[in-house]
Length: 125
Image 1 (cartoon, one colour):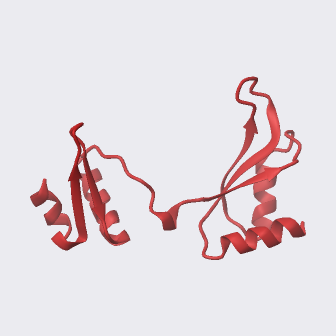
Image 2 (spheres, helix red, strand yellow):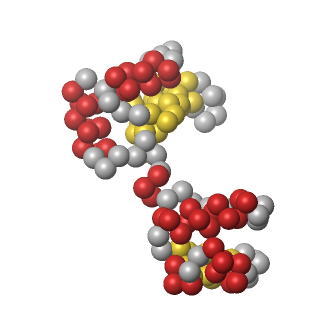
Image 3 (cartoon, helix red, strand yellow):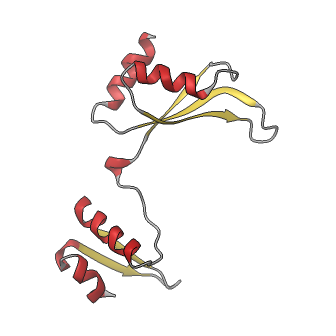
């Protein structure tokens, strides 16, 4: 395994930890190393689980007090008009009855100034 990883990455760019359930955790130190290793695993059909790098994760916000009859595409279009790039808009449903609630999860594309711009835009509208 070490020789396989070393062909893709240089030795100083990762470290491994073995667990008792026959799994191995590989930590890489740079986003470039992460992308190269995942690309190599996929090319060789090696099963793996991964976490999304922090810089690529969506920024999730919750919109309150919107009628559940509003279609998510309408919300998405409005957010795009405000200069945001939504990945997903989802109406939240009650966990038992599955009735739509006046709440929406919105996943936005990551941006350096997302928190400041979301606060100002949503309080201004």
